[in-house]
Image (cartoon, rainbow, N blue to C red; front, side, top):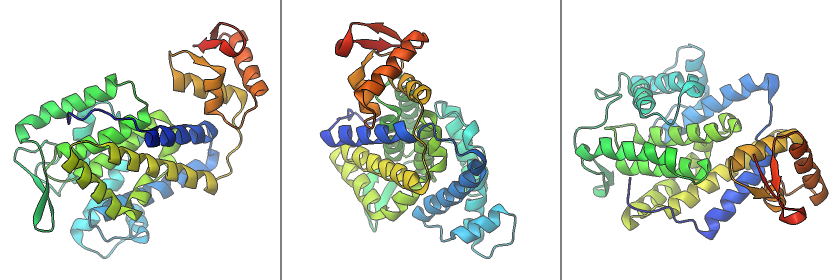
Length: 319
């Protein structure tokens, strides 16, 4: 990893808070019979836009045709890129994003027939060019295995939220540039996998679509961070993208208000083994009244989901 620590700015705090408020409303959203359709639509959008960022010209209708095993006219390399990406996204829910071997296996599927070193870390030096100028020189190849091992250890040990860790991982993978090709695709894919680990709803949200719409900004932010040696700006950008994705999902779907058991379960997942107050609980669900929050917590204590220490507004709750 880079030596840059995670700098939590006021903007990052606000964006992270807004994201968690929205997730409090939609994290337990059940799409029922519509889930297959939503998952399919999101897969097509994600593949099309993520590949488009890397220069693939195939449009959604062509990708849909490839998915349906129909004949498509287009460059053979671009068609193979789509087929590989669709194959990988088919197994998205089976991938454990905390395992480094899964990253290598995913890269192998993604780059099969496109890259001799598919599924392996690079053995040579690489640089990223902007026009005729080098905008980023990646770390030496001999450092890649250690850097990637450190990055996966960061995921397991760092105490920041999974939302923030997903964005940091994305940036760090781009910085390390561990593969000869396919780094951008893998960085965005792994961010989505880590978001899905935190909240299943991200299975139906294509942040790649928004990144594609902001492609110039995406590359400009990466370049600024590489030059400055720290990734705060990229973290802010990524959180903005995630928030926009959630907002668009909410506006496109009828989201039922979460029930009291759903709210408690969300709080348990959010706070894990940490203590929290009624005020903390209300920050997760700002639409609730104080009285409703108190009823939720009192019921959870009675049902042995939570333990309580202290009284009234100073009471603290813990799983």
